[in-house]
Figure (cartoon, rainbow over the protein chains, first blue to last red):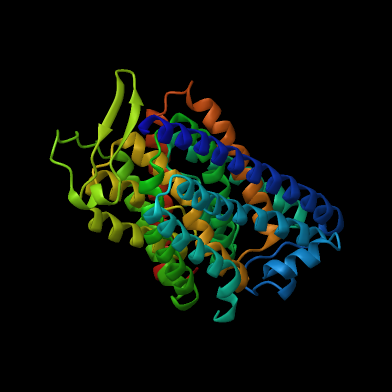
Length: 130
Length: 278
């Protein structure tokens, strides 16, 4: 029994490692593609980040970013890549819920769900009170 | 400066930060914000947003390598992530409320503290104590492979560690950094987790912690694609190269130099915060 648990743990951790690597790779690729479009179109405009203006609405929420990126806007694509990057740890936590469930570890399924709720709230709910 | 030049220079600076951060184990995020605000005159909120994004990238990238070594303790990580993510959420909300000058001063102090922690010699492990009932109940005690076989360890002072982790999360959310220094402190000092386990587990947690504040940052408009792009790609490239080099390089001198850089940046952040220049 002890051995089989250790084996699932190890295998699961390898799956998680691959998931993290794939997430980072995918997001870096999307950010890079967006960067090319952005620099070709806006490369010679002045860069000024001295004052904080906030971002336009198209770049502030997951569904708006998705819509903007599909219009092949450089900034939209970059933001989509960053969103994928933020989603990578969220996917990892989601995955861990199943991992602990397979080990029938109820306490840790509960802990992991709690972390997942905080993450999803930040991503989808925080704009409601911000 | 036009966008092309700005992107190029920020990318070079971020690559260096990522490289030094991973070679010294101090993390690149901690020098990014001072670099962007002091040298590139970027608004602190944009800088914090870009830094946080790069923290997720390096943490996830490195965690992939660490997980396979079998040092990180997933249960310790997941349990403490309850504290760090809640803290991160609070920190991210506070970023909008706390005046920029105060954030700069807190940031500077954290830099000084990180440099101090990196110079301090590590305490020896304290031999065997009976297992802590709470840690046992939470299944936090673990084991890791060594050259002499599997080594078991027990974890202590769970509530203190949990509380410190909440603080680490809040700092991470407020400043857009991984706050690995505080995380390792909570696990090493308070919970007496072995060094290798605490370092790798802390790295494992940093990405999840940062993701908890990233959503808030995004909806507040702190994450600017034009700025975050060169920062994220640069830091990621730098830290990947750094991890490869790490095996071959003697890092003692480098750590000393990097600590001095961190102290100088910390003092500069505090000065600019007090002078109201940030």
